[in-house]
Length: 402
View (spheres, rainbow, N blue to C red):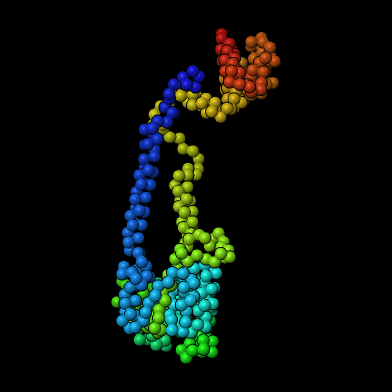
């Protein structure tokens, strides 16, 4: 059996009870956090099921709009791939893109090429800054969202004037198109834009156009009966006999030759999430950091025996295999105690030229052996370290002897 196995248990040794006492607060907080996250996810998953889906009767679905359009002779077809959406474009079709930001840059460019000059209507629901610039050239999105949900038309677009106030507040847009209809402004920026095509480009009696919506409220089941939402939705989506409702999905894979960068593969909002984690980490570091300033002495809650402190230091030295530091500490402490006994000031206790002559005169011994003992090289193994401690102890006892 080794010496380490026979060491007595001291108060410095952690026990399962102490570990649980220290970690139970953090464990409880993590359990509560996970429980809350799961509960919120379950609640939100039920509420957001079928969002902007014309087949869904849930509050955030759009089945009510599809049924009202069907009563007016407008057929609604749901597509989930870019190829189907591009194939459905035409002068008698309205193409609604439910979530344009889910499309990649290559997909947005391909969709714009298919809709430009088709003679049909394209409705973009709340496209972000980079999406709207590719799907509706000449339009830019303002980074600040509208704080007003219900807005007045304040434009000459017949559909908007007949509908009146509607819940279009959300993303705000500006356009350089000379004949764009700028409607439902919020702080002089539009939340609904209509960008017409020229008759020569479309070749149709009724040229095509692009509608940019700043919010999806007028399409949702739970908001359709408020203000002029239903009227505005029916007029924007019912101008053609066919409505193609494009819901981008996971099966809508990008083109094989499309190269996507690392940041394009990350989900939207990753930057804000990372920033929040960084702020939380900084706050946690400030919470756990020591207070700046001088050290303040405090009363220990319990009395710790000197033997336990010494044993703890010894275990740390042994675990780190730091025989050199242990030997230095033993020799330094011995020199500090021997200096006053032989009449040498404590300030000169570590100077060989001051301490060794006084010790040699007191013990009438060999100065070289004393130098090797008090200032020699570190021991090479644990046995040599133990022998060094014994010799230092014997030297101190001999000096103290009357």
